[in-house]
Amino acid sequence: MCTGRVDLSFVLRAFSKGADGVFIIGCRLNECNYITHGNFHALSMVHLCKKLMEHIGLNPARLMIEFMSGGEGILFAEVMDDIGKKVNELGPLGKAEGIDEKALRAKLEAVTQLVPYIRLVERERLRIPFKSEDEFDTFFTSDEFNRLFNELIVDKLAISQIMLLLRERPLSTVKISEILGLTPSEVSRHMNSSSRQGLVRYDESRKCFALA
Image 1: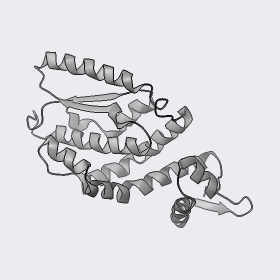
Image 2: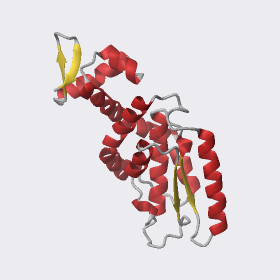
Image 3: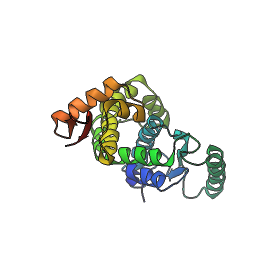
Image 4: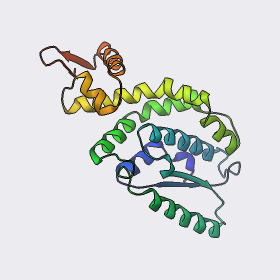
C-alpha cells in the first residue's frame, strides 16, 4: 500500500489502542512507483500529527517515518532495531508523559473527532509543493506553520475536548479550565461561540454549561 493512503485516523487509532510508538515506512522520496508522490503526503501527515501530539502532551518522537527501497533489507533490519530501542526508551504511552489513562483517551478521542476537518485544512491550507525532506522540515518548524496551526486547529481542538467533557456531565467554566489547562477567558470564548451555534446551553440554576 502506498504511504499516501496512511490516514491520520490510522495513527490515532493505533495510539488509542495502546501502541507506544508508530512507525511508517515508504519508498524513497522522488522515487514513487505510482507517480502520485504519496510518500510526500505521508511526510506532511506525520509532521502535522506530531504537532497535534505535542499539543495534547504526547511525545512526538513516538511517531516515526523512514524512506527506503524494497531491496534494502539490511537497512530495514537496522532501522527496525533502532526503532524498537527508541520506543522502549520512551516508555509506556501516556504514563511516561504523566497523563492518566482516562485523560489520554479523552485527548485522543477529541483529536480523532476533528480528523475530517483537519483533512480539509491540510488539503486547502497546508499541502505544500515541496520536493525534498529538508523543505518539509523547514516549513513545519516555521513561524508560518505555527501561526496556521494556532489559527486553524487549536480552537477547534479545544472545543472538541470541551464537548467531550460536557457529554459526561454539565460543568462550570472554572472546572473546564482546570481540566483542560485553559484560562477561564478562553473557555468563555469557546462557550460563547458554541452557544451561538446551538451546541451548548447555560444552566442558570446550576451555574454551568451543558450540551444543548
